[in-house]
Image (cartoon, rainbow, N blue to C red; front, side):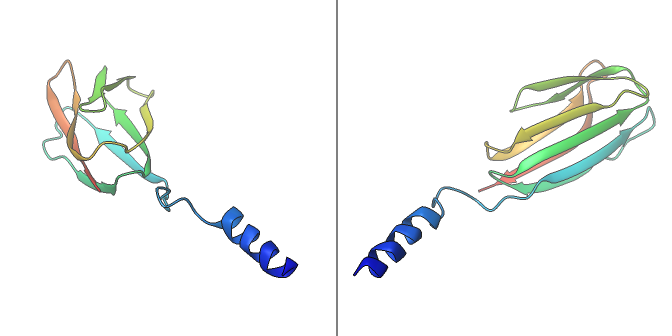
Amino acid sequence: MIGVLILAGMFLFLKKDPQEKNSTLREFVLDVNAGTEEYPTWQIKEGDPVKVTVNSEIEDEVHLHGYDILKDAKPGEPAVFEFTADKTGRFEMELEGAQKLIAILEVYP
């Protein structure tokens, strides 16, 4: 009987929270220059931790819409975004001053 109680206690202690997702850091590096016309689309899962590094030849503010994260980027000084993808949908990342789309982030449930 004691063994059953110990096993039951261990099960409850070690049981994963059903809301907890098995997430792996998703890392992306983006190089932007004045002639860049194409942009990537990144697909990730809701709950994933994300790190995006934007290397830019253009001094500008980088904005991840929907998450409303803004970071300054300068030549030699990348903008680094670290966040948890807690919103689903399609989100644009752009150089604000240049009004230039540089990436799309798609977050799926």
